Image (tube, rainbow, N blue to C red):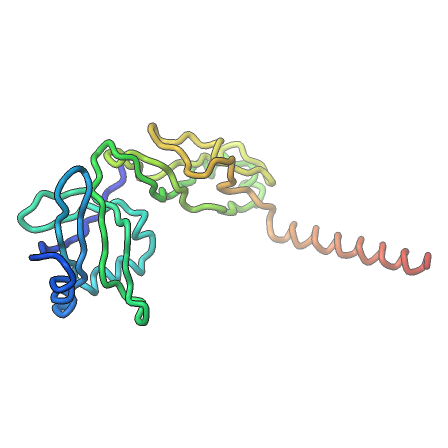
Length: 214
């Protein structure tokens, strides 16, 4: 299932340069530019509050956006730069790059866990410890997966799931070149506490024996 691409609304901005950018800011907007795909750069402007909300939500620069400008065709873009006021730490300019459907892009894709009912470790009281709730993948802009699926079936307490255990969507691959962990099945908290206490008792006994020997 392809991931739904969120909309990002902008308006066409007349003129370029510092003067035009300052005018946009006086009007409560954040100026920006859209470039790439062998086309002329297009100056745009964004509603300040709407843009700030999206920036603070996180993953802004690793999200593929469907840029909507009235009177123009929608275009898929990814943010390449956010300039901020050095004092207020607020956005004053944003740069976006156009992407073709065949373009490769790095995005964080959510992880979905299935197979809970077929997981022996969970039936014994274990819990799923999520190491990564999303994984950064290199994907094709025209076929972004909605999520990756991690099957917990057959896992016992102490077992883990690594990226190499997961079947990734066609045409995608991890950005990290190692077999990193995604999740593991941990022992019940009562059992962990008991193990910790036993370990503490053993350590105390060893310390006593060492003291007696001295």
